[in-house]
Image 1 (cartoon, rainbow, N blue to C red):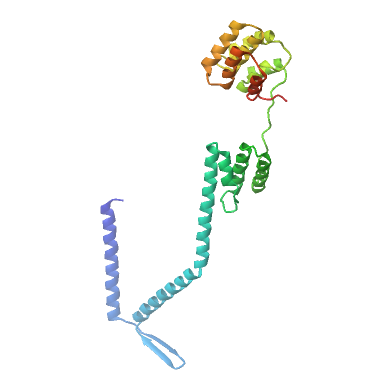
Image 2: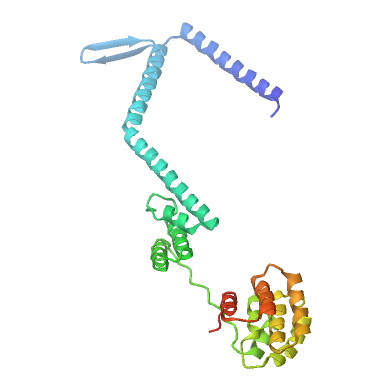
Length: 279
């Protein structure tokens, strides 16, 4: 709405109120009216307009008095609600702090914050879920399960856990599965599942290599198989391919150590931490 239109509307309203005031003033002078109240020998006489003004004034005074009384009556409840909101804000701030420490990979600090009671928070279930995750990362598994149970009690409809998909336990079956749906973590199992020897595995991985040409896991597996089959040149080729794809991959670094110093129980134990389990 432009300034000119607002000005015209304002002038119109002012003119209308002025005309109404002049009309009422003229009516009060020419025809004041008459109001009579009589009760138990008491008589009150006044003009109609005086009665209207007194009625309006008394109504306004009563409205103000009752409004103030109602406000004073609700003061304790308002103070209690204000205190409750402040308590909720502090509790929610504690929840956010715990989530931040968890995101910063400091589960112990997160757990110290989230151990406190969650009754004052807006989302107590989320509080205990974060506390459960912090305890799990801090390797306090019993505490983690207890916090998780608390969270599930507060969730109206707990979603069912997703089914865990286990990799095949046979080499050929795993090959078929990876051809249909490639999984980088499962590819690491091509070295160990089944009973095929290293040369047989290498020969059958050729077709998979043509389909998947940028997999660091596949290069790592072929390098280790070549080392087991004493194919030094082929092992070196796959090691260089793996380094080109991901030089900082932990298994690539372990592969270089194995190539230089040979395998050992310590190296195999470290490798096992990055290989998915087969059930």
